[in-house]
Image (cartoon, rainbow, N blue to C red):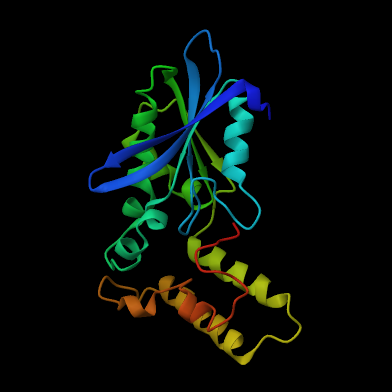
Length: 227
C-alpha cells in the first residue's frame, strides 16, 4: 500500500429511500480513466471496511488496489445504517439486504469521470459472492465479477458445518449450545425435506438466528459467517 499514490473521499448516494455513506478510493494523477471495483460485503450488518475486530479487509483491499491504479468503491451496508428498519422487516430478502445496493453502487461508480465505465468490476465476499448471479442480472454492463470465499454449496449445509466446527472447539459444550445445535439440525432437515412448502411457518426456518443457534452463547456473533 502506497498512501501517496491515491486519494480517498466520502460520497453519499441515495438508492430510493435509502441513503448509504460510501468511500471512493482513487489512484492519484491518472493520465487516463482507470478501472473500477465495487466491494460487496458478506452477511450481517457490515460497515464499508467489513470491520471484524482489528481487521478491516475491505479498507486494505481498497487502498492496496488504488496503489496500483484501480479505483475502489465501498459502502456501509443497509443493515448497518438502518438496523431497525431492516431487522424489523419480516419480508426483507437478499435483494433488499445486498443485491439492490450493490447494483446501485456499480451504476454510481460508472458515472465518476476518472473511471472507465467499460472496466468496472464487482467483487462479492462470502454472501456477497453468493449473490453475484442476482447482482449480475442488474449489472449486465459489468466488465466482470470476482467471487471471494463465496459459497458453492447450499447455505443451510454451510451454516450447520460452521456451527458443528465452532462447538467442536469446546471439550464440554453447554446444554444450551447442544440444544441449539440440535435445533439447527432439525431446521436444516426441514429445509431439505419434501414437506417444505410456502406455508411452512417462518419460525421453523430461522436457521442461523442467534436466539436459536446460540441459545445465549457468545462464541459466534449473529451475522458473522465464516465461509
